[in-house]
Amino acid sequence: MRIAVYPGSFDPITNGHVDVLRRAAAVFDRVIVAVLVNPRKATVDPADERVATIRASVAEALAEDSPRIEVVAFDGLTVDLCRRIGARWLIRGLRAVADFEAELQMAHMNRKMAPGVDTVFFMTALEHAYLSSSLVREIARFGGDVAPLVPHAVLGRLAGTGPSAEGAPEPSAGEE
Ligand code: PNS
Image 1 (cartoon, helix red, strand yellow):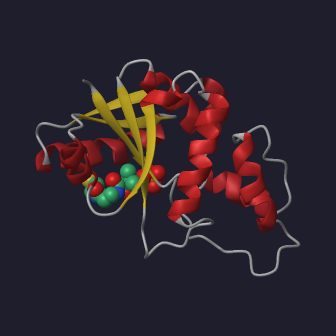
Image 2 (cartoon, rainbow, N blue to C red):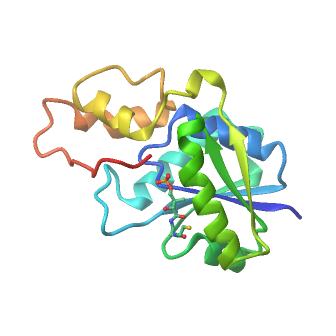
């Protein structure tokens, strides 16, 4: 069975992530979406909420593939998760050439640690090439409309982060 892990912060999941997941599900028998638990990084939602939102997004947008898609939270090294569950492929999305250098470095490092695990890149559809979780968070924080950018399930999670939200969390910048 061809098992792949799609790791990420997913803070929040965007239509670009869903697009990559759809492409991966067309190639692999099982895809495990692995949500990073990083206690050092502030996120809009804790990992268990991000897992729940991704599960709802999969049910909403990828219903046909959903029996073969699992969503889990993980900490530690992605390659260790791959070894634990017998996954031989890692999925990452590429939007533009700007993503490539960091992704290449990560893919080589993961291969160094786990030669039996290959990274497979899927290019997002052009319409998602400008989309990132950090931009979605910023637009939501200033009251912009993120409905065209994220699955429906995410909208409720972002609802409390707008300009009128007291004490809305401020995740660290600079990540996907
Ligand atoms: O969505 P992101 O933030 O771009 O995802 C980054 C992620 C989670 C794939 C990366 O940070 C990761 O794999 N973290 C787990 C720890 C790890 O394995 N680090 C070594 C990477 S070479």
